[in-house]
Image (cartoon, helix red, strand yellow):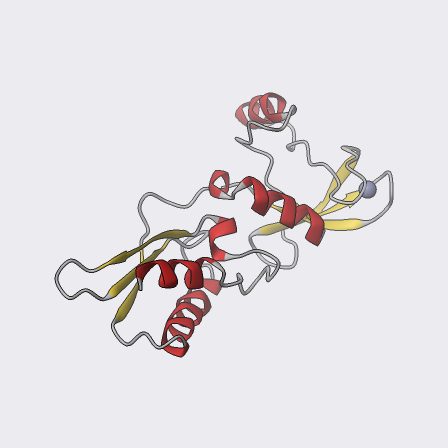
Length: 170
Ligand SMILES: [Zn+2]
């Protein structure tokens, strides 16, 4: 029963970025059995508090469990520790890129530019290096600090001229 719930919940798509699941985004903290009642307890950490998608995600999880025949469950929001974009899985980062959104660069150890990014962030004099999700060029410029949602910034690639969303690091 628990493994079924885990498989079910981890495959639920994020309402804002349907290409990614809740587990890809790292917002699914845990799925466990309540030691007292034996019900399913799902813990979620929103990408940032106040994100309007949080309630939608909570409702999606409840609906999925109900439709799968679960009757005893609770879906809790856990705000501490705060979600970090570092929690996005490597697979999630690849899916973001495929979806046309540049994944958050900061703290990503697999990116060669991460040390540069951390340095520029610390000095706060330059914007982070953001690679184009389409052609991987780092010759990009920030058009707006706010893209299609407050979680994203709008960038344009100067190599292929395509605008794209950048998932801002948190
Ligand atoms: Zn490009």
